Amino acid sequence: MRVAIVHYWFVGMRGGEKVVEALIRLYPQADLFTHVIDPAAVSQTILSRPIKTSFIQSLPRAIKYYRQYLSFMPLACEQLDLRGYDLVISSESGPAKGIIPPPEALHVCYCHSPMRYLWNMYHEYREESGRLTRLLMPLLAHYLRNWDALSATRVDHFIANSATVAQRVERYYRRSADVVHPPVSADVFSIAHADEVGDYYLMVGELVGYKRPDLAIDAFNAMGKKLVVIGGGSNLDAIRRRAGPTVSVLGPQPFDVLARHYSSCRALIFPGEEDFGIVPLEAMASGRPVVAFRRGGATETVVENETGVFFDTQTVEALSEAVTRCERMEFSPERIRAHALGFGEERFLREMREKIDSYFAAREAKR
Image (cartoon, rainbow, N blue to C red; front, side):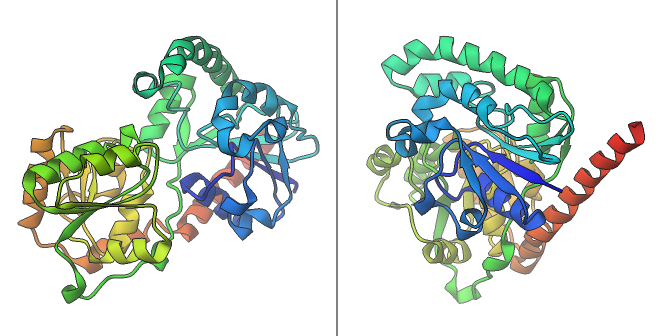
């Protein structure tokens, strides 16, 4: 069986790229298609497969400024030649599913989320943009939104990474979606000894508006408790300026530093609404509880009062109260880690294979 995996862009190793790595293990014969790739920023697993890029790759400084070419990506998607493939898997949270699948191919879209900057977070993204972008964004987003909704008709089956995303697929594309949670490499994390657990809390992730690092900073400034923030992003400098004396903003860090902080923090702070959110599961794989906003993917991974606690409004008062509540509780690191192990890669591969095999079987039954 000839398999093509279409991913929006390869410019780092975040959750979407980890899903592609797992799909390569499921279909090691797969060819990869994308708009842009930075070979220095992706894994050898990805580089081991044949990779074909769209014409976006040849545009000036595309590796750095690929987002500036978003308006060209619908056209670029449709120029990718997928003739001869039996199975096409599009990995979608940017323009990927809009390829033209061969008539005989099965097209399965693994949806991390419909494009947030077009749909559920359009107004937030526009509000945080520069003056020129704010001016142009309504017209551009209207065009992209129409194309995005139309391109959903080219998909035979949607698989969402969470029930939250499945609801968005239904809302914006009027399509149902099965749910298969993405893989978490829980086995690379470990529980620290009790005397190695520190007196600080931890926030991890890209420092952008919707992840609400500002809320975490303000709450810990007000409480006077220690917070360590790990991650880069467009708001890094602003977050450093916002941080008080008890908050340490480390910026991007290598894996060993991240893993050490996961295992030795008092708890992870997760103040934003995520599509799924692998970070809480990485913290739980390290035996640490999570203090999370009760929206989005965290509601599918955090077990209240067993692996963490929730807060219901994104305010300093609500987050501070949840931190205080967490401090009064006793959590079992072993039980927390056991919960996280249930989201491992073998589970993802098994569920994806079962879903895709069932889609092929259903299609054959109709013939």
